[in-house]
Length: 347
Image 1 (cartoon, rainbow, N blue to C red):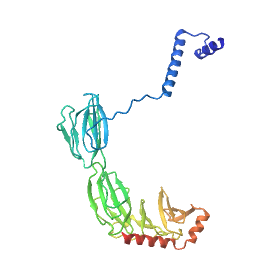
Image 2: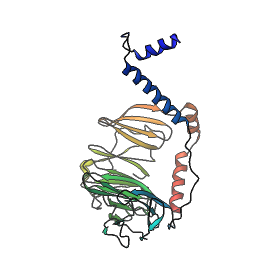
Image 3: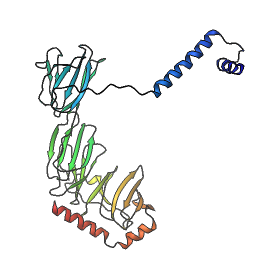
Image 4: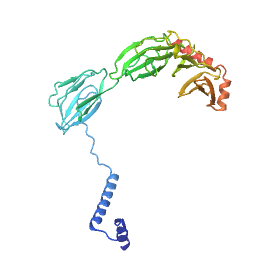
């Protein structure tokens, strides 16, 4: 009808020139056709063929299937180390078994009796190999770069200068790891005796690090594992410019002055203002450049001026109902200390 022709004309004559060329009409019709075709394809379900079970020589889970364009064959790799080549008709042509190891093997798809090259040096299983064709480089992804401790890991710090990772575990062991290879360089057993190491902190200059444990002692170490070197459980250590802050299950802040680090055993200094928290301090954070923030078990957050060591503000995190419950639970700190002592005796 005339109305439909007018609507079609208005759709094509976007610039309102009053005329439409044949090319504009053809282009509009093609666009409508493509849009209609895409809509039909998106609503239609694919017609899959029936599932076909292909016999394979693998005895474990198949981890990778890839297509080799040079030989027009499929290659499959399973967990136990079997490599299988299949034709485009999915018929098995060659199968080499390979023992599980930490090597990267290079294979010729036409000669599968033995690898044409073996790359060694990894200390953990290789799970993937990637090629960068533009740079003619190969990269191998390793499954586990860092070996595990015998006990649960409690804290981890990293040295950017040495490219080393330091881990501490419940068994009071310190382990130094090389990030590139996952090799353990050294281990310091019984760093805190029979006590559990609960936290680690790195010095800003990375010349030393600090460890705190359930024995209430903060020890100073260098990255060679030599020890330089309050009785509460240390749960957090903050390294400031001129001091070291240690917080644990205590109501007060413990501070160590860096000018006394030349001594083997360092005594804590005096924090100017005390008795601001009514319950044990469980967390602390440094807000550069002037403030220290501490939080206690009863929900109170205190803001301290580091220069004057005076509490400038107090904030309550919990509601009044929870405060009444906390105040009515007399001796909560003693029960927590007793529970920790019983747990340590069981270990």
